[in-house]
Image (cartoon, rainbow, N blue to C red; front, top):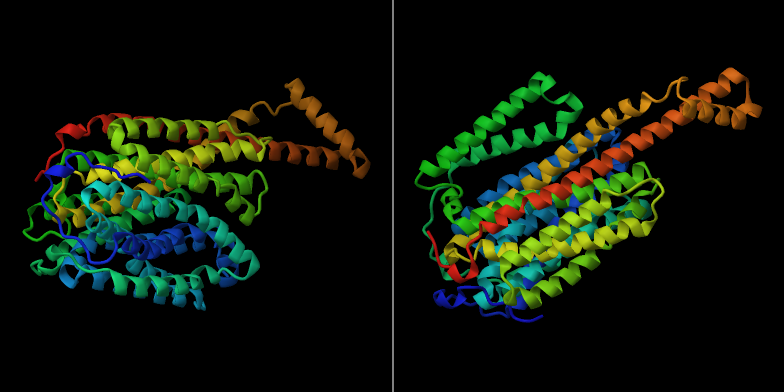
Length: 526
């Protein structure tokens, strides 16, 4: 992979360099990050198995996902403060230890309450792994090689959710869902030993002035994120704003968010420095990240759902169906690493967004008679486009920031990615249900004796079913078969509409890319 030269890199002050080889450091910190990112998707295919073994409903089992996401998101924004206060290396080691210990506890959980508690603790440990690893990578590599570092980071972050469902399905089928948590133990042990041996704190972390944690800011952050996540996760089942408690949660999330922003902008020692969003490149890239995360996570959730519920794929096979995304990701990373220094980053990102929109549009052409290639090809394009986009997006987002601002920036950046993903999944699955109901209502209008096509369909089915029972019984069976077909068609239309909506969302990111500062004008800000 060739060297990527960041615009304006020559103007950056001489930076600290670690004693160890940066690539060994990259492997050390990415082991933990890969493990944590994979865990965000590995449990999706096992929820029915967890529900069965815990004697709960599948609906209740979704708290396995939300409990982790809530605690994970809260710690994301506080990662920079913990790094400055306790040292980045010490904090990273502690996070890996907590994550591995909580994974063991989750695997041994005797009931759902204990499992949820273990996953909350796991989320607290895992939340810091991504921003801390990203900050260490950006600081360990010289400015001209940050593109390569981000290519390595993006490769791990994008491929992990692809491997997660497939690995989770195999472990669940071959052994037990508990092994999805046990597998973190050896990986975490290796990551802990490598980080302890190779990573060191830069001077601005070692010499950072110790400050007290922003207790009020942390509390407000926890309140509005928890309220928002619960509302998004349970809103569809409760009828959204038709339920009083959903309206209360929405109000609490809105008030908590506004209070959090106001406090962080006025306090002398904020939990996260929101003023960094005055930087045009960082603000624009953050906005793009929210929308792209909505597309990425929604696609990853919708496609396995379509394959399992409508195409009849088992969990393992549906996980394998999305695995070609990794092939596209690898190709995208290689191309981005080689060509990003030779092409205007804005053009690079715009082309990637168009390719991402195209892949979503292709997925919006699915039907119940498609072959595997009809799914594989769009998924490869999707992985290619996302990796091609993430590398310049992540690099440009910090290209005009000082080195001591990078840790705070990566905390915000990873937070909005998680929130964007959660919002995307909640919105698209809610739309899936609502669109399906609306489509079904339209199709049922044609299921009348006045419609010749309907009468012929009923008669044909009665002829086939005739030898198996009386006319009244075969007629009811014919109606049941036709209703099932109508339901399938309505659900398919809903998936199509969702994927096409994601295509439009990708195109909506293009104006934000045009707002980025041209490379030749890059300079240190704030």
